[in-house]
Structures are given as C-alpha cells and as structure tokens.
Length: 163
Image (tube, one colour):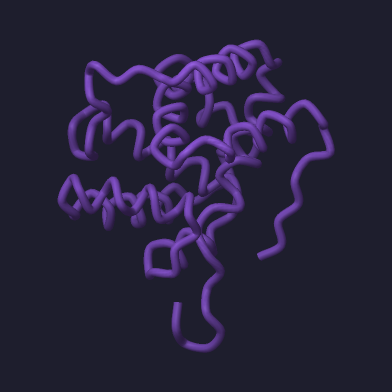
C-alpha cells in the first residue's frame, strides 16, 4: 500500500513531534485527543461514509478478545510496526479504515472492553504542548493530521497467501 503524507508543513511538523514521543506517550496523546475531540473526528472524516465499518469492526473484535495487557501490546506493536498478524492486517487497511479502527479502540477504552487509560495519567509537558497545538488546528487539518499519523502504522502484508 502506498502512503503519501500531506505536504502541509505544520501537519508534518506535528506528526514528527508526535512520533518522537515514546510509544506510551503517543498512545496517551491519542487518548486525550479522542476525549477532547473524538465525537466529531471519525463521523465527519472525509470518506468515512464510504468505508466498510465491518472491516474496522472485525479487527477491533480481534483485539477486544485479548487480555488487557495483550490489547495494550497490540497498540504498541502497531506504532512500532511489529511484524505480527494484527499489524499486517492493519497495514492492509485504507487510511480512513485505520482511523475508524483507532476510533473504535478509543470507544472500547471508554466502555471498558479495551484496556482503559489510568485515571491519574498525566501527559508529559512535551505531549501537553503538542496537544495544545493540535487543538489549535482547523478541523480539516486535524483530520489530515490523524489520518497521516495512523496511516504508516502496522506493517505490510506478506506476499502470497500469508497475511
């Protein structure tokens, strides 16, 4: 799957700053963004109405069946591009379906089917500063940022019959 990032220098700068955070800080920032803006992100994402939600739901259901520790590891593995089945399945999804998958994970965290964020968790100062910058972007830029952030995660499917 070919992936092309936006040419918007502000968005690219924010993504690079996000990717420089350690994996757990990246996940935490994603959670805080969802809590702040999640209700409008995925339903309004361009192309969301043309996505087959069953694909994102199928992958979400695989993760949901795992223990909380395994669920957290799957999320870390996606960011770290680990070569495993879920990461390869994720890597074969469209950008918008990837965004929908992360949205479903966030919903699962909220309702307790996915490992929740600890109640006393606080963002680092670097994450907090980036969060403030992201909140300051126009809505369309936010959607592009989130899509560009989740798109390169996971790993490529293997050639042949293997996923």
